[in-house]
Length: 118
Image (cartoon, rainbow, N blue to C red):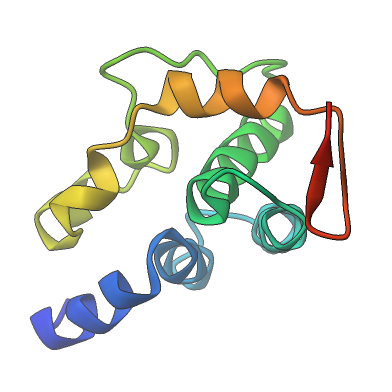
């Protein structure tokens, strides 16, 4: 992959990479669209990180797995079999506390009109 293209994708954050994963056949369009939809509904938490987590959970469900095992060493690149792209992905995108984000997201009950209700 061209490093200039990777720079452009990195500027788009995880959504850019999810779109590329879908184009490469590493991710289903359904997973991408669900991630895009739910990230657009997100509030108080990084929608970009939510998108990658939603896509990963949806992808795992498609394989018959009912959960996504997050650990400090978890990487979306492992989930989507995209480890070969790691050198092109901006380090700040990979340095996320995935567990903390998922736990914070789970504590939200409802999100309406960009205001969260607990």
